[in-house]
Amino acid sequence: MLSYRSMEKNKTINEDIAAPRWTKAAPELDADEPISKTQLKAIADEQQALGVRLLTLGKDKLVKLNLPEALFEALMDSKKITANGAIKRHKQYLGRLMRDVDPAPIEEQLASWDGKNNKENARFHDMERWRTRLLSDEKDALSAFIEKYQLADRQQMRTLIRNAAKEEEKNKPPKSSRELFKLIRTAIDDFDAAASAAASQE
Image 1 (spheres, rainbow, N blue to C red):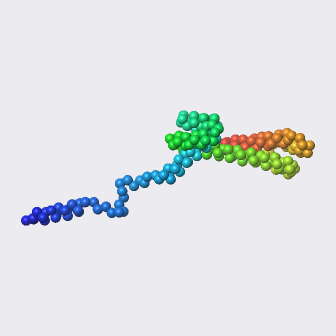
Image 2 (image 1 turned 180 degrees about the vertical axis):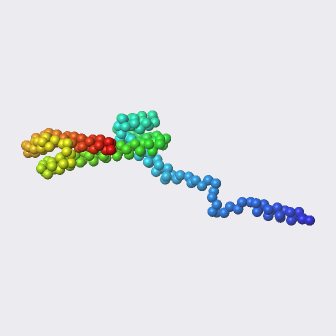
Image 3 (image 1 turned 135 degrees about the horizontal axis):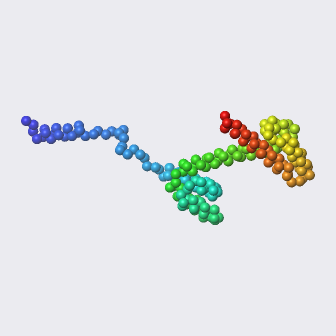
């Protein structure tokens, strides 16, 4: 027959066996770590920077972004602010408003606009380079241009090139040079349009 002391001892042993044995390596119930102040500061800076980027856009593009009314009005009001201190405070206000906005659609649209602008800038610089070549080396440059852009008017381009040279020699306004650039742009645009139409039919 077990004594009272033996029963108490067995009870203690059984309880010890049934009890969970956690180690230092065991995961906690909530493993998510709180965001540090440094991370919060970085996020706030990014939000404010995006808000400041929106300040550079015109009203037509801001409308296309479908921004919250408060943010849209704040961006429109910013165009009326001129004092440096007020501008700084307003940018901070924009940063606070941006906290309630999903930045992904905005950043995607901005990237699309940037890509389009970069493409247009590249085309413009290509036209400028052609004009410089045509004005400095008419014979070879004109042949190369006509070979690539066959829809261009060779005779009109030759006339504008020579008139531009005369205007520069007499220090006159570069009217022919500007007209030459327009002709170059038309030839390149027509070529691109024809290429695009041909590609769509394939």
